Structures are given as C-alpha cells and as structure tokens.
Image (cartoon, rainbow, N blue to C red; front, side, top):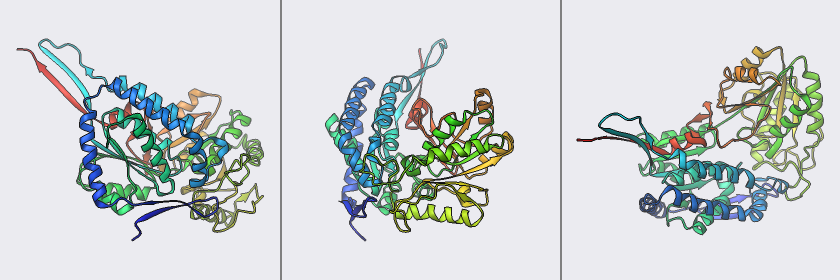
Length: 460
C-alpha cells in the first residue's frame, strides 16, 4: 500500500504534486483537536463568527491568481474562466449573512406562564468529502455554513485536487480560526471509511458517485451520523414550442460543455418539441462549433482535457455505442490530442438518439449531449423522468406558469426555467432518487448542519 498520493495532471500526464497520507495517529489527533476547538468556538457569537469567516473568504479569494493555474494543472479547467472565485464569493457571503436569521432562536407564541423557543446547536464534527470537478464551490457549500453553525470541519479532498484543501487550510489559519477547528486531511478510502465508522464524526457531506455514496452509508451504519449525499446525475432539458431558440441554444451549449461537461448539474440530454426541433438543432450545432478543445493553459482554450483519461474513454465508449445503434454525430472535427487513452476529448452533439442508448440513460460527465425530438409536453416529462437520477431539470419556454406546472411533475431537486447549470445560494441544493439525500445552502442547509433544541420554561 502506497503512503503517498500523486496528482497526475491531465495536461501532460506528469506528476504535478505528491502528498503523504495521514497516519492513523495523525487522524486520531485531528479528531481530538477538532473536539477541543469546537468547544471554544461555541463560546463565540454569530456576529464574531461572521467577521472571522468573512476574513476566511477574503483571504481565499486573494489567492485566486495562484489557484487558477493550479486548477488547470490538477483537473484541466481552462485558465480563461478564472477559477471559481465568483461562485465561491456569492455562496459564501450569502451563507455568512444568512446565519443571523437561520441560527436565530425560533420563539413560539405567548402561552400564559411559559416561555418556549427552539434553538439550533452545532452537530459537532462535520466531515466534508469534496470532489475534484468544482473543488472550491462544492466544498464551500458545507464548510462555511458548517463553521458558522459552530461545527468543527475535517476536509478530505479528492486526490485529483488536493491543493484545493491546502488553500482552504491556509485561509483558515490566516483568518484566525481556533487551532483544529478546520483541518485538511489527506486520506485514502480505507482510512476515510474507518474514520466515518469510528463514531467520532457527527455529519458527513459527500459529493461523488452513487457507489461512493453507498460506501459512505455503509461505513456510517450504526454511528447515527447524519448524511448529506450529492451523487450521480443525468440532468435533462426540455425546449418547448414557444421557446426563444437562439437564447436556449446558446445557454444549453454552455450548460452541456462548460468544464468539459464535468458539472454536477451539467445538461446531458435535451428534448425538443417537434415543432421547433430542426431550428433548435441547427442553432445548437452552430453554437457548439465554437467550443474548441485545447491546452487549458492557453488563454484562447474554451474546452480543456477531462480530469482523467479513463473518464474520457468512458464518454468515447458511450458515443461509439450510440453511433453503432443509429445516432448521428454533428461536430466531427477531432482535435489532434483526442485519441483513446487521452483525457482530451472533443465536444460532440448526437441526434437520432433514444433511451436504449447509454448516452441518454447513464451518467456521462463529459462533453457529449444527445438531442431527442418529442411530440408534446407529456412526452417530454415522461422521458425526463426516465432516469435513476434527479438533480436539476431545465425548461425553456416563454410561459413561466407552464414551467411551474410542468416542473411539479418532474422528479428532480431543482427546476430551472430559461437557465441551467447554476446554484442559487438562497435555494436549497438537493436531489432525489439515486442523486442522493439531504440538502446544502439556504436556511435548509443550516438546518441540516445543526441539531434542534427545545426550551419549555414554566414560571412558578
């Protein structure tokens, strides 16, 4: 068993960084430090925490110029997009401000002789297991509200993006968080599962695969730790007959191919009303031609490599299977770097697809999208729900009342109208079916990171 983790860069296959795995002694010491730190943190007020965590985010954002090329080397995102600064700032600052309201006692109406209210108390030690695809955005969803709520945080970042964990740790130290309140640990799967099963972790927030979620649940069994799981996705879009086709095409291309399609809520399948199908497909393909593949360190590159060659080969396999079954590809222009065994994968648009093809049923998590003609709204809803996943779904229409009505019939955590691939921190981020359980952001995110406590005080 190796005692180090290597980050293999998708840019050129080189070892970009290497870190030692935490030992059993170091992991146990981290748990002890977390327990002590959260006791001191409990004595601080919400206002004091807001000031400290504002400094935490300020410092994290100041490192952005260094973070951007690090992300390109670690997971392939082009430097032209400037990292994740804007989204991190929006979510973090919103959740910091929301804490005043979300963590305030809920006072019940007067009842003669009684004072009654409910408070929210910290769960204890929260473990955040963060993914590589948005290594800052996904982690900040739990780290900031978790700390604001009074918890200690242990971050276990994905092996592909270990340096993101170090950036969080540096920000925590600079902001003056109590020693041990936030800790970044480099751990393998076995030690992670052992820590989860130790009974010393009170809540686990995991973003990753469905199989990874099952392993987390199994490891936590019997500990009574609470779970927040964001797992797989196969997010659909439906373009209605009354949609603005130019707008829909441009935004759905972005939703399909941004981050090389490696987005939790990226669009992976599109259904289009037969009345506007041809016009939409023409516009979509024209927009998609501009999404060219290249080295992510080149400022002109729009689509970088996928994080690992195996991920790209999975999408290649789905595409080839669809083509053998009668689908048609429309971009065709393969980049010289795009070959079997390479993480560089040219975006592709497929038509002539159906739900017997894995590209329309199974998660791709890459730059390929299938577009399918439908007869009406009912046909679209049936196909959108024909999936084991349910994270987001987008509807493209001029009729927002119809969007709300159709949205109520879609098995999903979030319904979008005329937008996609976005998290609004005021709204809970959640999923249904195999996409997971729990929820982050909004006041519901705070509820999931705290324990309610009732006070029933009688005057005598």
